[in-house]
Length: 112
Length: 115
Image (cartoon, rainbow over the protein chains, first blue to last red):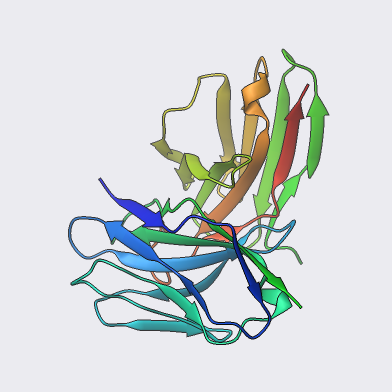
């Protein structure tokens, strides 16, 4: 079946540090890949996505590239801010699927 | 206007009670979902309805019963609450399954605490 594995947290960083959260997936065919973010006390919201191999999703300074050869979709940001403190979820879906499969979430705390 | 709204936001109740959580979306989406998030932030899908028809029913105790009176509403009723039901329950919606943007729109969550 489809599954997503992301690095365990929590991750604690200083402001302006580089952030990487690893995500690898298992799926048949060509899934779409997503990163969702959950800020404290809120629901999840889509951060970025990529729908085919070599696509790069980007938003709010975050980037992730769909790597089919390594079945990965790592999230990166070059210089984090305190406001980036949140839980980040990697997810995948198959085309015409009704379900997103989420990773376990990675809690990121950025200190001033 | 809130796109996906859930009520109540907080619910504290005793074991054995029955409770409901309501969800409404004003996005015109066809598909709605219930997810359960445990204390470790792990998200698990419970149910999904597409145009009032149940399309996903994961391994969930039958004490949990979803109801979709119309495609804008998806309610969750829980009978005989147990301690392990304590979690944050998220409602979400998407247009026609995950077609198009593939984006789920989440509500703010309903935190259920069973004592």
